[in-house]
View 1 (cartoon, rainbow, N blue to C red):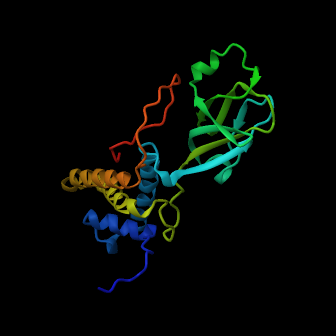
View 2: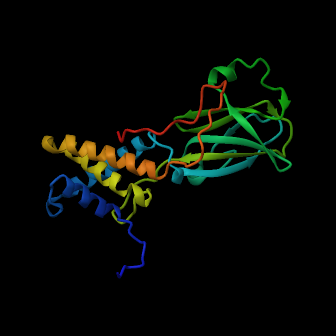
Length: 242
């Protein structure tokens, strides 16, 4: 059996739009610039929605920065940097403090827990953090207040999807999410262009494809139940595409 020996399949956005339109039974040869702009806008809304449904491993990036003595608040893009000056960060997972090469877990706390700490200036080794996901950026607030300027914070940052811009760009997704992307976009276009006989079927296919793609990247480690006093914990996988 002869095979290609290559692994380069990665459709650009123009191909994704054509595929989605064909799944809506719309001939790509008949589309206008308005269809293209509409499809691009739908892609962006879809990826923004996906970002709330699953923390796929391909969107998680390990980051670190050094604490400053007595400084409790650290702003993404100012006190620690990441892609696009910090605005690419959607959430923070799995924070540890590294001192002399030894990592100590830092637990998440809620806004109320932070507010109720009587003396927020007490210095010590930080063991709790509040993640403030404001509209314009993300801030980490630690307690206790750092007692030196040598401890390091290491964490997993959840990144937003990159923008879908020009037709020659590739979607910011891995190989196993291409079908979910095409079906998800097809459903949204069918909804826009009032194709009622296809909407329900395309929604179900989008749902199934999203679930299949999510399962492909699901972590394989053993499940551990860890009690926590904070209100934030790592979210579970969602089954819904929408």
